Length: 215
Image 1 (cartoon, rainbow, N blue to C red):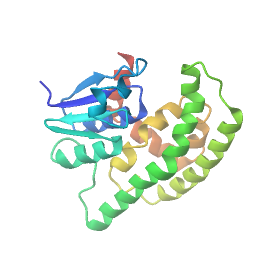
Image 2: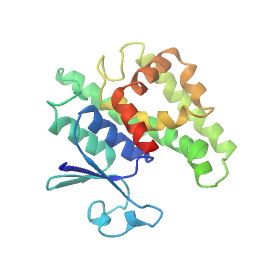
Image 3: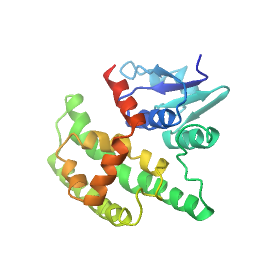
Image 4: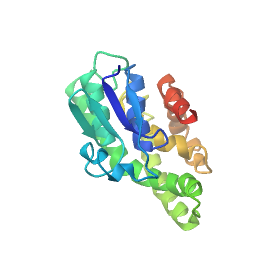
């Protein structure tokens, strides 16, 4: 029986981020679905795992965690000897650079990319109408971020260094949804960014995350 339990749903970008890290580490885990339509994430017993009522939450033995990026950091450090490193085992300068790009994803990329994915993908799922003005504004903001990525990726194979790290992995959920929309051109029109997207989305661990959505 797996000691690691993930409470969430495989369509959730935050849950996908955690699942990707677990698969990269080749760890056994149990995915426990949270019935969000019924509001289970806003009720006990789920609130005892995440008092903010958001998914996912992770249990590993007697430890419980929430916030997807904190969870992936824990997975990378606690299971450092398993699977992919996810944190480049280089000098302190490399680690510092990795942390910079982890922060860039969370502070610069994701706020725009996730809102754009909501407009482009999730509104349709919920029977809502896409706001063209919001899409245009968000794409403009994301273009500026991706211009910086293009410059960065001309200096290293991945964002932090020449190793695949959490800095790259954290981008996968939003990129996955946007690549199925007209916003795909934002990534395809930048050669280095396009090459990077192809590499990170082709990882076997990520394919397993997408397979979970089909079950």
